[in-house]
Length: 397
Image 1 (spheres, rainbow, N blue to C red):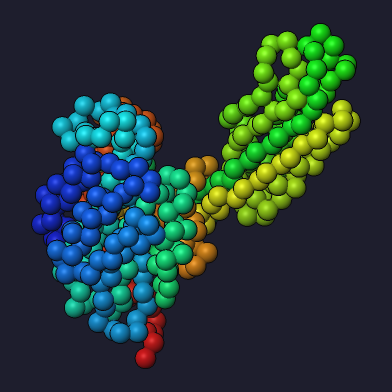
Image 2: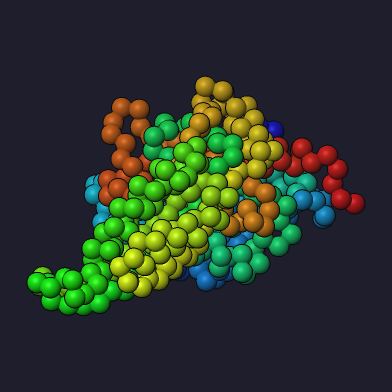
């Protein structure tokens, strides 16, 4: 089966490059992927799958029926949205949308998803299970997965696979991570409420800026002394809003930030921990406060059994020297994690780096991918799906 999968992938490779170039040159922002969705639906329909558009607002879902009517349903999820970044790659297929760019590889993800659908469609009569292809919008804003789940895309799904490009891994290589792959990402808003006054008479006021400065400093210091260092937490205050004039003591300051963590237990503890510190700083000086902690996405926790299937499939397809076991997770976030609340799943890293030139990071205006990775991703995903069904001991009657 692997040799047939590779042969089909080689045959459709020129078409996959065309698809990738089209997607890269026509990026759309989160929640605005209407033309991308129409294009994706057209491609999957052309290989015999029935596509449903406008799922999860601007997403697409398509299914490839297996030969066994009650076999396990495996989902393959890819995301489609781009970023508000002006492209600086000078590629012939560079973005034609001013200020918008596929700087996170979602065009590659979509291409791999489409290629996997095209490939498995040619093997449909030999596949027992049904494959549900989920083309998701709005991953960058951490909204799309919820939209798709709310529209029922995870109903009757037994397992789910995903991938994400990685520029520090060479194109054509695969990265495998057991356990936590990405961090939980939460939004933090802290409002310090003091009392305004004249800058020359601070003792008559409650200085919200001074108190806010202590909050920022103490939160950073307390992390290293009150949290297990083997369970990392990153708390970044990225925006401070407050004050009206240089000689007026501010009555209110708003702190906005992001909180990242890897372990679910740590994530659960963070809101109360933050509020306790803020309260301890504000109360002695008579300041009031509000702590608004909003959970966005949990950590991606890869299922061990499914991760092993992907690892074994990649090693058989490409050799062990092209498959890396990743020792460290990323503190970036991925709303793929929300699907894992519905079914076990795993996400692997697809290397897109070049061996002999600068590899710019994700979200960089000069981010570029090694196109050789496309076939690697398609073969790995398709063969992992095949192996998943092969490892189901007994299909339901």
